[in-house]
Length: 106
Image (cartoon, rainbow, N blue to C red):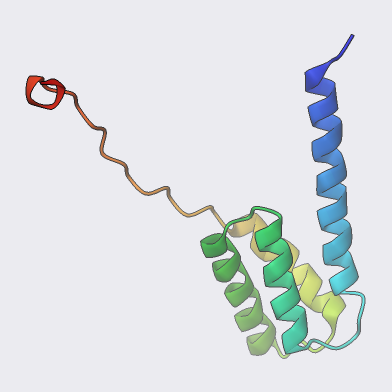
């Protein structure tokens, strides 16, 4: 029998492991470069983190890396982990509901 819940859970687990594996791969180099930040942004957006959240997270990590004088990618990866725990998703835009009135229905 097809169990949709377990298949979905398995698929999401593979996706999560793939994304985290790709992020770890980005930080496999020793030096922090502009290309690292560009690749990280692209990967997070592809992982559906969201454009605004990704931009805020990467900017926060870059700023902390700069302030602390971090030059090695493994140190930047630790900062990314710490920052991602603290990064809330942006609040969704408020959408006004459309109320059907007699004028609209006529």
